[in-house]
Amino acid sequence: MAERKAKVVRETAETTVRVELNIDGSGQFQITTGIRMFDHLLTQLAQHGVFDIKLSATGPDQHHVVEDVAISLGKAFNQALGKKQGIVRMAHAVVPMDEALAEVAVDIGGRVYSTVEADFDEASIGDLDADLVRHFLVSLASEAKINLHAKVISGINEHHKAEALFKALARALDAATRIDDRILGRVPSTKEVIEG
Image (cartoon, rainbow, N blue to C red; front, side):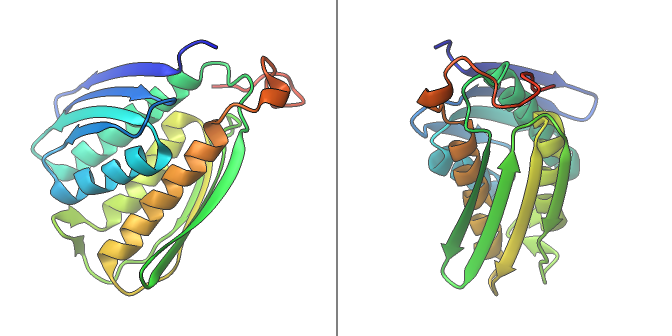
């Protein structure tokens, strides 16, 4: 099987983002975005998705940093998956974190759509604008060419709700990107191709 790795560099007038992704990794990560809470959430994606992620991002405005990280990471997932041969394709995860509970379902089928139900009562989660959690998920799904449904089912603590959401995303992506030995070399679609 070919290595499922990708490197993406995105340089704009607003940000510089560099991403290295290994889908078949061991959960290793080196992540620096200048936003501590965002770094923390991205490490959940690496560790609980068992992806190796090396990521650096700089920029003066956190909205653009988060958006461009999502764009770059989404592109990396799409590139690393190639023609998507042999992948499970669809998966979901429900993850608790103390009083919080989050659910994420994904379909790596080339049909871009996302819905995010994640209400945060505070404007910020640590040093991260709370609305950027939703924006990250939508932008990631768009560039990864996936269908994503994400929901915070319950919770009180903002940190716990966001972290449960990222852990659920990690677990769902891990399951959906796994190779199914029963369909090696085949694209999991009746169309025999997944666009994107």
